[in-house]
Image: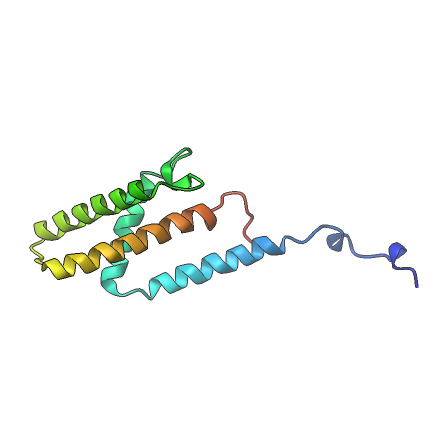
Amino acid sequence: MDYRHRVVPFYMTYQAPWHIREENNVTRDLEYLQQLYPSQAKKYQRRIAEIVDKMDYEGSLIYDEYPDRWQLYRLAESILEIIRREDEEQGIEGSAEKWEWVADIIQILLFHEIYRRRHCSRKSFINF
């Protein structure tokens, strides 16, 4: 049987964008799992997203092929200082041990937010 001349519906003649659907599923799963973060981590995640929003422009260091490690660590330190200042204004005290833990969490959340923006927030794909 010769399959080259088989009649198919018009919608099957276009290449299906399966990779786009997969990206949408990954993004949706990621957003759901972020909702399950502990309350402190969610608070830090929202604040980090607000700060990274200001850096989300073409040519920003977050879109460099290999972002400079020192700049990323410096950015994480400045976010830590912002959060520490905000907590002090609200009257929330913390030990040095707590701030070491928070610094680690902020770095992880920052690097994850940068990754998410670089790979999951593409403006070019179509929502199905």
